[in-house]
Each structure stands twice: as structure tokens, then as C-alpha cells.
Amino acid sequence: MKKLIRCLFIVLILCFSVSPVYARAGGGGGGSSGGGGGGSGSPSHHSSSPVRYVDTPERRIASLITFSFISYGFSYMKKYRRRYKAISMHKDVKRGLAEKNNSSFDEKKMNEVVADYYYTIQNAWNDRDMDILKQCLSQSLYDQWKTKLNWWEYEGIRNELSDIRLLKTMVVEVGDDYFWSYIEGKMRDRMIKGNEVTQDNKGMFVEYWRFIVEEDRIYLDEIRQEDEV
View 1: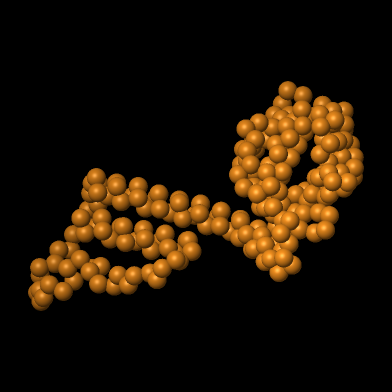
View 2 (view 1 turned 180 degrees about the vertical axis):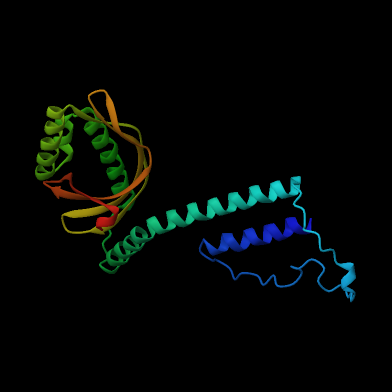
């Protein structure tokens, strides 16, 4: 049982070392040696034989808890680092708008618009529906995408998207006729040439989407990857 407690203590240290510390870590200096102060003065009482490792249910439980805590800690830290920049930018936007007494900024509505555009654009791209894309993209971005899709068609390449999800979005910059949104999404993204799948990605991705406002309509104008911001 002492070894189980020791394992749990180590897990807590590891957990707090890979995640933000919200409370001061406890000292835990005492009771860690398991009987170091017994007062036995005779060295003949100590055995020189090696300690044999015995697998027990307590050890298995401790190992499972350790693995779970470490996995959760790394996962949380990765997500925190990924969103930290966007959250900081988002706070700056809200602070700036508050200083200007801008009451027309409706964050919830803007996020809903972004989500609608996200799914519409991804599905239109998957279907190569240029009519839908023309309604959602600025002229410059539309021309770029049209050229790319036409070239892929000529080369016999298609990009299949499925299981499209939007995990998180937030406005990170606002101008007079534009705004930037943080996009955290996930989907199955396959590149196919002929009958051969050349790429098959299922992971999460982060992008920043720039929207412009022209004649009371919103258009996607630019997409930047996470490392480009």
C-alpha cells in the first residue's frame, strides 16, 4: 500500500509539472523512505539479496493511473499552447472595442457566421461546387481556388473531405471592413490520384481565416496556417 501511495504522489508531481499550476504544490518531504528511522543499529539485519519485483493489482492500478494522468497532462498542455496565442489576441480585441465603446460588436453572431461559412466552404470544396464558392469567397481567393481545382482535375487529382467538424472559433482581430477568426477544426482529408490514395489525414488543424465585408456581404479572403500568424 505504501508503494501505491508513493506512485500516486509521483503521478501528482508529473501532472503538475506538465500543466499550469493553479495552486501551490504540497511539500511531501516526509514519509517517502518507508521506514528509514526505525533505530536498528546492526548491519547484520539487512539482506544483501536483490529486491524481487512482484506484480500486484495495486501496481497495475498505479501504472494505469500514472499513464492516464501523464497522457491527460500532455494533451491539456498541447491544447493550451495551441490556443494561448488566439486567446490573447481575442482578449486584446475585446479590450480595444470596450475602450472605443463599440456596442455593435456581436461576438456570438460573428462566430455563428464563421461556423456557417466554414461548413459551407468545406462542403463546396469537396464537391467542387464553384457556384457556392463564388458566393463565399472574395474574387482573388475564388480565382486562386478555381485555378487549383481545375489543375487537379486535369491531373486526375481530387481532394475528399469527410467527418468535417469545427471544434473552436473566436474572433482575434477586427478592422473597419474585415476581421480575422481563429479556426480549430478536424476532418478526414484524403488526396486521391486516379484510384490511389496518396495522403490520408485525420488530425486536428489550426488556421486563421480573414473575412472582408463588401456591400454588406461577407467573403472569405485569406487563410493562414498556424505558423504563419
